[in-house]
Amino acid sequence: MDARAIKLAEVSEAAVIVGVDVAKHSHWARVIDPRGRELVKPVRFENSRVGFSRLDQVVAEALQGLGLDKVIVGVEPSGHYWKPLAHHFHSQGARVVLVNPYHVKQSKELDDNSQMKSDRKDALVVASLVQQGRFLRSYFHEGVYADLRVLVSQRSHLKRRLNSAVNRLRSVLEEYFPEYERVFKDLLGKASMWVLHHCPFPQDVLQCDSEGLATCLKLATGDRVGMKRAKALIEAASESVGVKVGIEGARKKLSSCLGEVDFYRRQLEAVEARMVELLEKLPEARLLMSIPGVGPVVAATVLGEVGDFRRFKNWKQLRKLSGYNLVAQSSGQKKGQSMISKRGRPGLRYILYLAALAAVAKNREFRTLYASLIMRQRNPLKGKQALVAVAIKILRIMFALVKSG
Image (cartoon, rainbow, N blue to C red; front, side, top):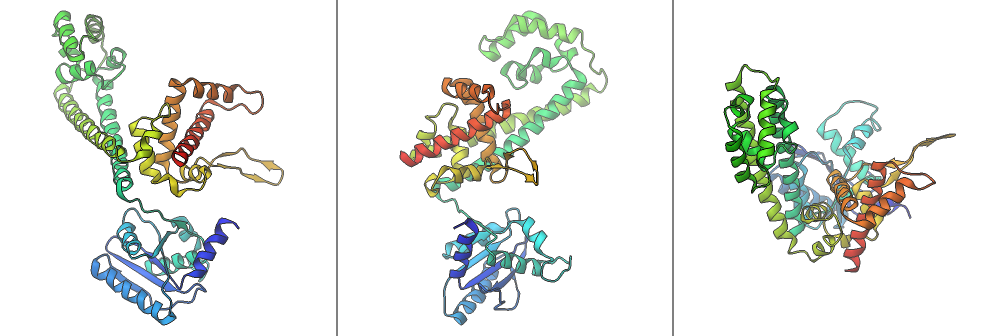
């Protein structure tokens, strides 16, 4: 039995299907039976406890009229607005499923041959798609997994903000001191950050003597950077072709960027520290971190994205969740190249790719696997393709470790 047939069997067991079009302040709901017949008038209700209670009453009356008690609630996930309603129904024992917004958009003209769009109409489209078995099962993270999922999302947000601040910082240096990154490859290293805070522009550097600058760099880095780097910095400053005007404005802009960088780095450290604390509550975290290339951040991100591994029957379901399952496009005699679907969780896919990079660099077995994939006689893979294959291997090992203990 294929996946859609299983979903249709689930729908047939339900007495009532509720399709909801979610918005920020108010929602529309349409209630139908498994045969597609509408049971009550369209319902508009507020995003509040009173509004939820009103919908509960409407659904209860529909159930009472049929003499049954099973409900499937379908929602079109719009940002984060759908989550309070979904958790409300989940807490009451109703089955909550998700309908792809793209499917709603493509299906809205099937019944009335009209491109008209409204929340009221979309709610019925959602209910009809659920009735046809065209939905995705929702999974509600609970306990530590729920906390990790929030922290993973917050870490991703902070990383984007940090990267944005670093890019603005780099743009100032490229304009006023373009030679700077030839001296400091790591812009956020201890030596570089000391210079950026104290003497960021060529005219500032040239006011320092090499011995004093070297002493400060040694203190900032614990004697790892000293006279050699100080002389290189002074030489770069003396030959700089950077802009010489607008220095005071640039200094203010640079100071603002540095403040953002320092702030987001502290926030990231706090989030990652909390991740490590939560991992101690999950026995499977230790198993995941026994894999070369999988550290606390990788383990926390995987568990935050996946939740409990034990809910999956085989590792291929995890592969599909990550979007690493292969899809092929062919038509007639034309055979397209297979590629990964990139559906599912992009955060999970990305962190597994980073884990593959680390594993190939640090572990002999994974390095051997990577080499065999790119050097094999038949169908050799390119570098990134081989890393994807290693990432899938790591995911499969994770699944086996957690399931077997």
